[in-house]
Image (cartoon, rainbow over all chains, first blue to last red):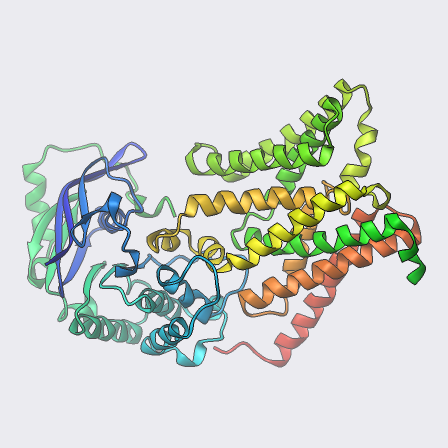
Length: 254
Length: 274
């Protein structure tokens, strides 16, 4: 079964085409990594896949349901790109991760034992059991990233979409995140992740999709990660296009 | 001190202060979390136009204030989402438009801006029995929603995009937060006044978080600080014959100063874990 299908997706942000006719599929139990240079559109693609960015054209299906009709949010776990901006009021690790249970909870009422258990298990799984009561803002960057992963885990999602889960994270944390993702997939989850470089995840990833200037320029096994050559080839096939000086547009709407 | 309660107006003022002190930080915590601390100020200014509209048309100013402020709240949320105007510029325009509209309308009603004084800084003697019902009802509504919907409101203010991917209707909750802030302003109008109401939404939260580590503790502690400042401010204003708004806000600021000192001492004793 295919858990995520992106068909012929195009996105324009602030008048600039960011994705052009992109196709992408993630099968059940698969780990797919999106690679590409800064500004290649990989972050926009995952954000579109979870409904945070509107498509100009094309379709997205999650678990066989068109995104506009998709309501089974508990099947989807999202780990946003890490943001340095913290909220204006302190919140503990436990409280942040509890947000990951929202799609399981009724609109009002206290968290139930199952919610507390899921939060405790998710936090333990990312190795932060001793920091449950710590304020999120006091943690290191790598620890904060693990908390955001725990928040996605707490919902027992079938598909995890992660935007650069290992960027700005020290090597040890990268390895423990890679190990964690491997464990999830063994349990039947599917993962779509954005990465700048694969690092310790190299041995886990089933398939790599390389984006360049908003198009898929290569796809295949991990070897396709050597994508610089593909980009060169790609340039010959396309007419030169106006290109803004700074292509850091992926995060402009955060 | 206890003879204060012999006066009807004082009993009403204290009841109004109770709801104000609880409701303002209850919703204010979310504004601070979202880094929209000044939204309350902007809506307070808009409510002034509502008050003047009430005076002009002969409708109860409290009622027109809550309607106009709520409309302003919806407008600013839509501007933030769809407009090409940044949040702070949209807020600034609310400030200007609210004050200008208020004074203009009150002039049209044949009165001078001075007559708005009791709405701007509060006035304990002016809480009528009718006002009291409205203030109590709205105060209970704000506190009940701010606490009852805490998981959703927390998620929306902590990480809007994650909330959206969890299936939370973020836009609806954003508008709800802004409208609850507008309603709170009307609740607080008679005690703290429109120009200072935002302080009661923000300062107790700032004071509480000097000493707290979790959102829930901050939320509840802020409501306690707000309640004490509002009640203490009303009593003090009676004792020293001053308007209640400034005394409430000065008490809240004093609580902040004490909490900041206390927090610094606690942190020095217990160094942050590395």
